[in-house]
Each structure stands twice: as structure tokens, then as C-alpha cells.
Length: 494
View: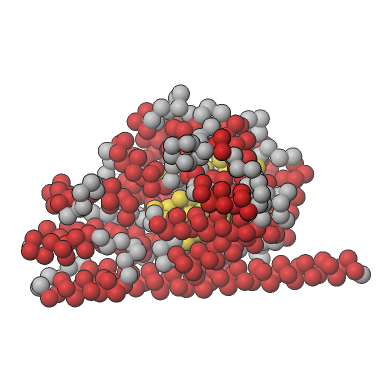
């Protein structure tokens, strides 16, 4: 796997997932419980990223939670949007994005209070933890909730959910937010939201994106906005935001070429596979694409009936220039389902899936990170900490796979021990790793488990530092907001 780090490359950031032979996999399969497939199990354990994931209704995966929220808000629950058999949300967006957006808003209308927002982001944090998502970037939009709460209340609610989440699940998972400006709202409201983002710079919002209805609102219309954002972030003292936008499937090559001058990476962008020179340019720069393969199949069933027919995705996947993403997990499938389905449909090497996680940690071009380091050094350092913690988790999985290669050398008289080694994951406590190490030494086996313990200790250490910095940043945001409101109130009195 080719190394693609930036100027501060360090040797421990070199990741290469070992190839488990057919003999290795056959042996590991004998250690699995009945009905468990070894490849499915390994993908479940694999660290994942999910950058392109819409919040509000998009992350309201649990319809039971949705019913609880609707009941406490005395809001009629949209039963017609729930499948009777699966009890999951129906997908109504096949070849009709606008209909999907309408239904998305109906479900989002359940969310009436800041407590609702806090509850859904905490539930999503837990979901990410359970599925070994090491970094996620849920995209939020106040437009869904502006009639129910202020912009500030909306931000504070998300932050409270993140604060609860990092305390409970921060050893495995880190979440930050992307604020989605929406194409279809009027220009005055569009500017008003950007003004509020500047007035209340939430440190948990690390990215500004562009989403919403695309019909009649092409990406070209927003180049001036993104140009202004580039100028904004290149002024010392201003917050630094990564900049992204949804790329329409029909976007011409020239539009995408111009867009890459303003954006740090692309959301979607599968049609870049049809432009060889542009694809080569992006790959050389280190810019990756947020591809949502199950979402593509759901939204465009006529042209993409299944993943085997998704030739654009396959080309970009093989070029190792994408991250895998869920888009709207409540409707199109969770990120674990995405990884599993890609593996089964393409019969691919696990290393290609692993590369997608790596790309999810490093979506931006190298030049973007160098610029970030120059204009926003403190933000850059926090970002580096997130990357370091994420890379340690990739290193943990890499070392775990190497440990699995050694299992065959352990006598079958220690079958239970071998099964316990197979059960290791990012959730395994340090105490259990130490116990396994001690047991292995007693039977005369020196394995990579000692390296695994060292990496786990570093994960815990960096996660704790990140937790402290995150909670301090959220607390500082609260203090700044109170001060800003007090000053505004004082100004009104005078």
C-alpha cells in the first residue's frame, strides 16, 4: 500500500495490511462459531471512517428512538415511511432526489428540541463505536430545525451529544461536524447562516459543505461563495474550515476542474472516473473522493442496479482514491453494510477496504494541510492528534492481522486460547490483552501481542489527550457564546 502522508511523515504511519492466505482464512474459519463467516467477522472488526453521512433524519437509524422523540414532542409519527417488516425507514428517492428530500424533512420534523438533537447525535456516536468507526463527520443543517430552535441552540445541542459520546466511546471513535449550506434556500438566508457560523464559530464544526436539492442549483453557482471562504480562512485568527461540496453526477469536467481550486475534496464525484486526466491530477495531488456506493444504487437503480454494474465506483476503488461512506445510513445502509457489500460484490482484497479507511483519515490534498498549518497552527495540531489517534487504530488492526497469521503455529490443544485471540478488537480492554500475553508466554509463544499492547496503550493515551482538548474546546465555546450574548444584550440596553 503506497504511503500518502504529508510533510511530517513519520515511520510509524506506514501501514501495510498483511495478506491472509487461504490457509490462514481456512484455519481461522474453524475457530468461528457456527454461522459466522471469517471475512464478515474481519470486516466487522476493521476500523472504518464515514465522512459523508447526513445528520438529522439521515442518522436517525433507530425508528424506536424516532417514535420516542415524536411521542414526547406530541408530533404525529410518519408510519407510512416505515417498512412493516423491517421496521426501518422506507427509501423513496429512487431516481427522485426531490421526493427523498421531502420525506427526509418529514422525518426531521420529529426533532423539535435541543434535547432531540443531543439524543440523536449521541445515539449515532454509539452506533459508530459499535461498528468500529474511528472517525465520522456527520453533516448538519439548521434548515431542518430552524422553526424549533435558534442556530446557537442547535450547535450547543450537537456539542452536548458529542461531549457525552467522547466520554463514553472516545477510545474507539472520534466525531466532528460538517455544516451543510443548502443550495436551494434563498441567497439572503444562505448568507445569514454563514454570518451566524462566523458569529458563533463552533470548534466542533471543522468542515463547510454544500448539499441540498441540485435541480436548478448547479455547483458553478457557488464558486464565488467558496472563493470568499478561502479568503476567510487565510486570514490569521479566523477559524479554519475544510471546504467540500456535493458534485452532481452530470457535472462536466470543466466544472470539476474549476471546483478543485476552491474545494479540499469532493463529496460524491463518481463521474470523475470518466475523465482520465482529471482523475490522474486529483490522485497526484492527494485529493480523495467521498463515494457512497450503496446510496448510488438506491438513488439511481435504472443506471446502477447493483455494485457489479457500478463501473465508475469500481474504477475509482481500484485506483485507491476514495473513501467509503454511508450517505444516509437510516435509508441506504450503515457503513458496516457498505464495507461488507463492497467486499461481497467485488470479491476484493481486504487491503483495498483498509485503504478506503486510510483515505477517510486523509481526504484533503497535501497542499491544503500545509496551508492549514501556516494559517491555523493550533487547529492543525488538533487535527494532527486526530490523525495520529486514527493511524494508531489502523496500526492496531494491521498488527492484529499479523497476529492472526501466527495462530496456526499454536497447538490445537489451546483451541480456546486461539478463539480468544481471534475475538480481539479495538474494544478489547488492555487488561484482557495483558492476560492473553501472559498465557501465551506460559506456553512458550512469543507473538505480536506485545506490540498490540503497546499500540493499545498509545491509543488510550492519545484518546485521553483528544478527549481533554475536545471538552475544553466545547466549554470555551459555551463561555464565548455567553459573553457574546451578554455584550449584545448590554448594547441593546445602551
